[in-house]
Length: 506
Image 1 (cartoon, helix red, strand yellow):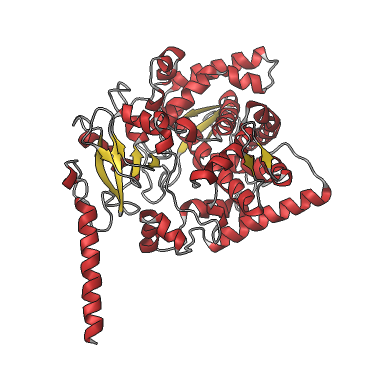
Image 2 (cartoon, one colour):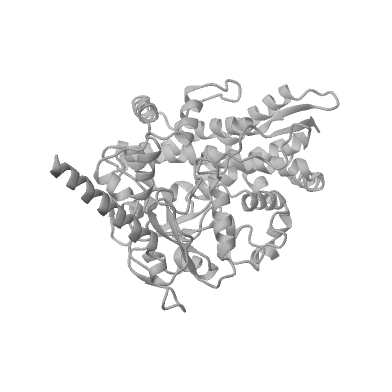
C-alpha cells in the first residue's frame, strides 16, 4: 500500500515537472508567451465557448506590434512557435520549406487507414503521395470533371427554382445546408461516382456520415486532447481517431465501388478513376529515376475520404459566406451578375470551362470571401531541425516544434488590408494582387505543401455561384443574423444555426 502511495506521488511529481517545463519553455528563452493553462495551454475555451479563429485573432493582435518574429504558444500541451512576421512565414512555407516539410499531424495508417491521407502524411510518404496525386488535379483533369459538376449545378438550379416562387418577394431560404447538399452531390459524384441526390433527399447515409466525420470525435475531450498534443505517441500506442461507423461506411463504399468498376470495366472521368489507375499501375519510375509504388486499398480510401471531406465542407462554407455578403452588398452583387451575363453571352449562353475562367470579378469576390471568412484558421508545420530565425540570432525554433502560421489573423491585419473587416473584392484586382506578397493570402496555403485540390475547389465554387447569381437575387431579411454567430465546436469556421437570406428570381 505504501509502495502505491509513493508511486502515485512520484508520477504526480513527474507530471507536475513536465507541465511546468512545458509552460515555462519559451519564457526561459526570453521569448514572450501568455501564461498557458495547465490543460488547454493558450486555447482556453477551445471547443467550449470560444471560436478558435477568435483565439488566434486575439493572440496575434496582442503581439502584432511587438517586433518579435514569433512568440510562444501552447496548442493544448503541444509547444508551438506562433509566427508574427510575414517574412518568417514565407521562409517557413517556401524559402526554407525543406526544414518545415512536415505537418506533424496524427496519422496511424496501420490501425486507422483513413487518417493516412495527403494532408496528414509526413516525410517520404507525403512526398511520394504528393507526386502521385498532383497529376490528378491539373487543368486537363479539371476539364474532364467539368461536365459532371455542370450536371449537378443544373439540378441545383432546378431545386432552387422549385423553392423560389415567381411571385414578388421570393422566399426566405437557409442557404448553408443547401450549399452543403450541392457540394456533397458534386463530391459524391466526382469522388465515388455515386448519384447521392442529397439536393432532393437531404437525409442520406452519405450526407450523415460526412457531417459526422467533420463534427464528431472518436474519443472524449481528454483522449482527443492527447491526440492533438502528442500525435506521434498516440500513433505508437496504436490509437485511432476516426469513429467506427464512419470508418466502416467509407471503407465499405470504396471497396464496393472498386470491385464494381473493375468487374464491369467501368471508366469515368472522376477522382476515383484516377486513383484506380494509380492502384492498377503499380510501381513506376519518375524522370529523376526515383521509384514510386502504386496505391494500396487503404491509401486509396484515405485520399478519397479527405478529398470528399475537404471538398464539400470548404466549398459549401465559402459559397454560403459569399452569398451572405452579396446579400448585404447589392452593388457588388449587381456588378457580379453583369459580368456573369456578359461572359455567358460571349459563349452562346453556355457555361464552359473557358467561360468560368473568364469571370475575373467572380474570382475576386470568392478571393475576398476566403480572406474575410478563412475556413481553416491557421497553417501548421513542424521544424525538422533547429532553426535560427534570419536576422534574429536569439530566436531559435527547436527541432520538433510545431509552427503556427495564423492565416485568419494575417487576413485581417490592417497593415496588409485597409479596413480589414470590410467586404471589398477590389482588393483582388490584378494590380492589387501583383503588389501583394503571396503569403498575405493563405486560404489554400502556400509553397510545395499548398492545397493540392485548390483547382477543383475553385472550379465547383465558381460554377455554383455563377449559376445562382445568373438566376437569383439575394438580399437580407429579418431572419438574417448580422453579425453571424459562430460555432466553437468545429475546427473549421462554422455558424450556429443556418444563414437565412431572401431569394428572388431574376
